[in-house]
Amino acid sequence: MDNLLKPDDFVGISFFIATMAMMASSVFFFLERDSVLGKWKTSVTLAGLITGIATVHYFYMRDVWVTTGQSPTVFRYVDWFLTVPLQIVEFYVILAAIASVPIALFWRLLSYSILMLIFGYLGEANFINVTLGFVIGMIFWLLIIYEIFFGEASRINSNSANEACQNAFKALRLIVTIGWAIYPIGYFWGYMLGNANMNAVNIIYNYADLINKTAFGLVIWAAAKKDSNISA
Image (tube, rainbow, N blue to C red; front, top):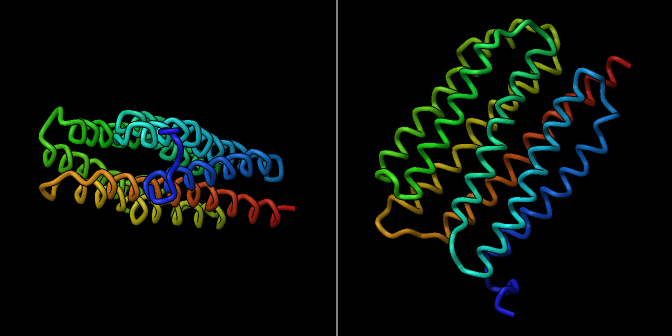
């Protein structure tokens, strides 16, 4: 009976809410895939994969928390190492659907996202100094933001004649900027204020994942539906 979710376990409840919401999102995206134009199918499929992968990991993370009361740091970063690069791939796929995009841009964004996660994990898992991991991870996040707002990715999108793609790209980069900002807040609050607060870390991370992964997919789906309806 020790592994049952207790009504006053707000961290466990946040794991449960995130699990169910992302599972529903994944089903929705896969069902909607065939209702959009061909050039959007890959993007909508990726949205379903992102929330689907997260759902599987959240089942495990919820069990780890409810059973042991320990923060599932390893499982969380395994999830992020799979889903965050896929979110970066979304930028490339959207741009590639409307323009010729240098492959170097893809590898640059992918490298930034992976290095951001590596140093975040090393800091949270105490393999390196917590503050050092935070600072280096932030640098790579800022490089991603620079690329999608001011760099080559932004210029390619600005030159696109497709309004739906432009709007999707702009909305996604706002999620990467504002939505992803929730994670360093959780990192700072949980690890850099003197006493580790795992309740705060997990609640913040869980709802950030729910908002960012689901909203990320919904932005793509909405743009795909709009573009498909216009084309029809």
